[in-house]
Each structure stands twice: as C-alpha cells, then as structure tokens.
Image 1 (cartoon, rainbow, N blue to C red):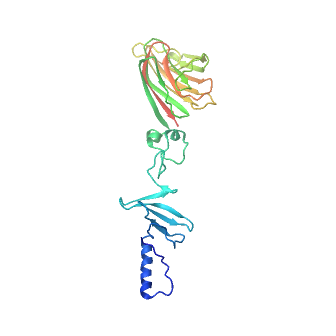
Image 2: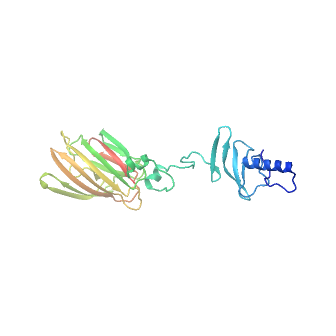
Image 3: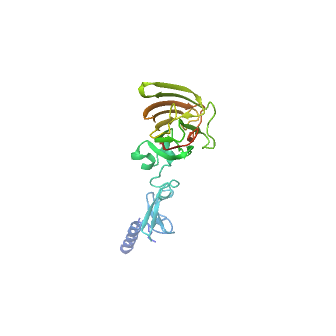
Amino acid sequence: MSQFDPVIGADKSGLAYRQDDNNGKKALLTHHKGASAPSYAEAGTFWIDDSASPWVLKTYDDTDWIGIGTIDATSNLFTPYWNGGALVAASLSAKGLVERATDAEAALAADTERYVTPAQLGIYGGAIKLISAQTASDDSSIEFTDLGSYHSLIYVCDYATVSTDGQAIILRTSSDGGSTWDSGASDYARTNVRYAPGGSVTAAGGTLTHIIVTSGNGIGNAVNEFAAFEGRIMNVASSVFTAVLGQSVQRVDSGNNVWGNTSGYRISAAAINGLQFSVASGTFSGTIKLYGVK
C-alpha cells in the first residue's frame, strides 16, 4: 500500500515534515496503489486498485471512480476499458477496436460503423460478387437457392448444349427458397427479338410459364451447336415491384451465329430467393455463374 495525503499539515518538525513529504511523493509515484480508494482523493486523482488481480487503474471525477483499464502484473499486460468494460478482440458479437460487418450488411451497405473485408466487396473491391457457379452435366435443371441479399442478379453462361434437338434453356423463379417454382400459365411476360444470318428479324411476346433464356428457337444438338447467354434480373428483393429481366444470347445453329435479346418480368411482385434453369425435354450441359450486384 502506498497511500498518503500529499498535503502536509502545519507545525511539523523538520524530521516529521521530511517523512510526510517523502510519503506523499511515494503515493504520487505509485498512483496511490492500495486495496481501497484514497480518502483524500480529489477530482483527477489516479488510483491503482490492487484489491484483486489484475489491478484496475481508476480516476476520480469528484463523485465516482471511473475504470480506465486493467494491469496484469503477472503477464505484464495493460487492457484498456471502453465504455466501462475491458476492450477485447473485436468480433461479430463483441465490440472491440474494430468490428466486421456481416455479409448481409456489406451487401446492402446497411452498416456505417463496421469494416468490410475485400472478399465481401468482391474482386478488387468491386460492386459485383460471385454468389455461386452451378454446372449441369446432362441434367434437366440446376437451381440457385442461396441468393444472398442483393438488389439485382447477373447470370452468365459461356457454353451450353442440349441433348434434345430444338430445346431452349428456360428460367423460373421461386419466392419460397426453391420449395416451389413459379410455373403458372401467366406467371411471366416477355418480349423476344431474334436476329438471324442474312438480316432476318423475328419478334415474339406474350405470357408464359417461364422465361426463355436462349431466345427464339431452341438450341441444336449437332456438333458445334450451342448457346452462350448473359442476363440481369432487377428488383430481386422487392416485394412491391415486380422483378424485371434483360438479357442477350448468342446461339450457333448449323454453323450460323444467331443473336437474340429478351426483356421480361415476373408478373406478380414478390421477393425472389430462388432461380431454376432447365429444359422442357431432355437434358443440358454447361456452367452458369450467378453474381450479386451491390
């Protein structure tokens, strides 16, 4: 214990004065270390409370003692306090110097206090993040049901083939995580324009049980007949506005390059949390990558 009132009283002899002076200086040097608070404390006094281990460094505000941090005399570590508690390693559940935002908060920019990692921002901190890549290998369908929280989605396929001649790859949505797929006779509306060799243009539209991803006529199944496509779905998470879609497709049929453009939408408004790519007959093969747009 190193506590002593540094204010020296009057009428002290030389020896007593020197002893009181030394004791007061020692108390100041040791921050009045002791198991109980110094009775002579004034606003701004520092005190090391050694009543337990680790010690606690405190300061007096003229009414209460405020903890500043702990001193571990065994490990020689000082742990500062933050808002009355020990500052610990930051995590999603414990606040420390820095706390990481959740993936959902980073995707929606819903948190302005926590940091985000490069992986959460996407490649080089961009606004587009790969959600998943699904590969069909003679499958009738592939499904994406973990879409995250994004305002819009981009799907890309560089090369897709079909087992049955003349089949188109089609898209359906789900609002219940893939338990059911919207396939009513009037669940979707679309407009399709197809440009063929020689400059011929074919247009079509109407309501369907699906969106035709590969545009117009189906894909051939002969050698070097395939389709490549890319599309974007907007208003994915909105339950007020319908999800709308815009896409383009390149299709090679019998050595000819056919280009198509499709716009469409899901007629009933609902938050979409599942996508299904399929063919009505036979199977298809190819990898479809799904990206989320922040």
